[in-house]
Length: 468
Ligand code: TYD
Ligand code: MG
Image (tube, rainbow, N blue to C red; front, side, top):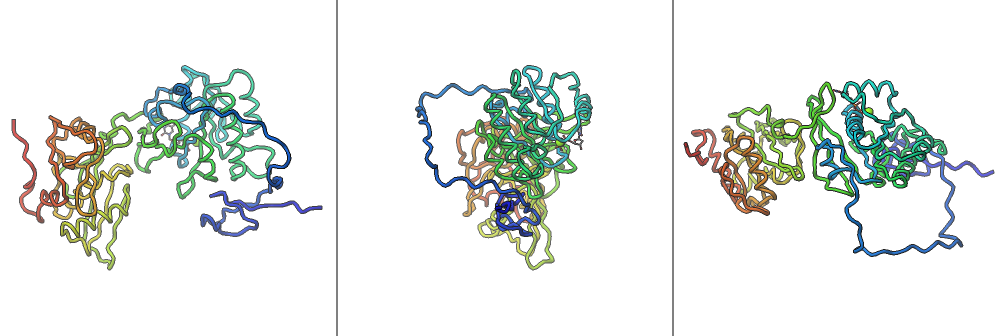
């Protein structure tokens, strides 16, 4: 009799090996390879059977916008692109305890007001979920609740009767398909369970929200393949010690991926933060050297954050450069430009950069504010408390235009800032803003001149506010 064939699958990346080893050659993970039953070999080629012909249609005859299901929680709806598209599958990832179940229960509760919703938990008993719902003020919401892990049972339940508009499955790692031998949470099970549920969602036309756990390295646990199977991937993130949570899109077939949703975790669940700038600037201290306020954009929304820098003499042969919340390669570039083009000596000094409030920014437009924070630290002079900065820095020291300057300035003015340092050239609309005095610069040396040499009189190079 033929030996039962096995294959060895890495639970981190999904790579398949003919024999076991301690370390995955594909992704480098240790102790992640697990034996799984091999599937019967597929017949070579297509064989003799004839397929049926597929009807080809034209691009032009496209239908109108797909119907969307918005839950009314604006921070959530913005990230999904104005609501979830019927029949689509979304994956919500995040660290344990960050609040995924809480958010999705609130979303389910909000949806239930207008549409039939089902919430299936493989992690908690129905009593626990009821308790949480009461705490969230959703005790009376007409959500169909179940504690189940068998995909066969879930499919059977959702196949019968009227289909719901949305189904939450918390979490995909607890679901199992009984035709596979492997344990729930393994790559094979996660993939098969997700496939069944996604097909069901497409067939019955409901929105599927899958919760996925995140591994140490930050990817959604188990297979990356899951990210290819779904229509949208969203991460729910937050920093320990901070109450705010960000929902961020990584992939979205039906909307933008650069939008963020901001929430605050309270004793009564998540509440929306519609003005994140105020939150991120709440603990700012004026008059401390080494800080600058960056007027950034997250998707379509302007967000102001404080960038902090600390420059100190280094005991090390290779000075330390540490960054929290920004790209370290980008900091190295800004420091090199400051040294080479502006003569700011940073050799022998450690540089620490921090985006205050636990925010993470990716925009190159932050370059100028980073340079401002570093210059303020080096010159030991605070940047003016009422000024924001934005602009991209090129390797020649030139300050380049960035998108949406008008929106950035308007947000700054709204939060009480009265001055801005911005690129002369701006991508897109030029923004004469009556409420805010803009110092337009086109080289980093102009910014250096504003801070001046170490420790002369404060505020020298800055345009003075006209007293009324
Ligand atoms: P949870 O949604 O269970 O996280 P996840 O599903 O991502 O693992 O959130 C758990 C945390 O949220 C827990 O530490 C308690 C906290 N929490 C609140 O602070 N307020 C609340 O109203 C609720 C329901 C939870
Ligand atoms: Mg949970």
